[in-house]
Image (tube, rainbow, N blue to C red; front, side):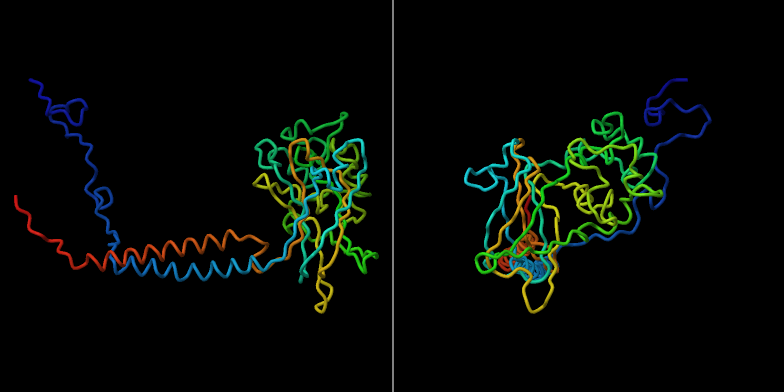
Length: 359
């Protein structure tokens, strides 16, 4: 028999004499031959132009509303890093001054109505570093007795100290923010009234009641943390974070807030709540205030900054003009494109698109 290349199917070996011819052609079905019914939109001026105008007319008012709402939120920031030599907290940059307490005076030009939220803010602190984020043991934080005495290796090098397991282990817990902030109102130029700061209710409900648990067992909290030691940078162990049993140990809300890592190097975390006591009086009236700071948390070594923020909120949360600007920008661009396309369509719609072509 003579070999003919055309007898070979798709580069494969030639078929045996009398055998069925092999083929790589897909089956003759609607799916494999791509004959399924489909909808393909046809973009015309009658469909595109109304879409652009509708997007513009919807987005621009929404953006203006969000932007105005954000600007109506009262907010004040007090930087107390102490880098400026004239700052009252400059003396606290020296490690020889311990403990260091500094006082910063400031004035509220406008009253703060409703509930007021006190935040602490940090800059140039990368809580989003991969190894930092992983440096924790969620089983230990959930009260697992086994993980309490044998923490995860992810916590290294803050897993054990002095041959005892660290509770809570890991770099996140070890670097917990520990400045103390106290706010006072100056009355009649001399008398100072302490502003009550609520320390419970600042953490997410799911964190407080689901993710974080103290070790189970009988006896005091100190006995349940027996055979463990405090993190290296902590002054006191975890069972002495608060005198309130419902806000102590792993369920301490300051600790819980800190353990929810931030996505950006400049961030703020909720520190205290200032609740409105009466509808007849503002929560923080306009006037002179001073902030007492127990300066413990070092940030100067990595060029960080520390600040205290007082802020009210609205239905959309805290002060953030970005969302309103984004809506206004998107709506404006859509409306402008609609106008441009309308002019182009009006100018060229009567032009002949079927001119004869001579070959």
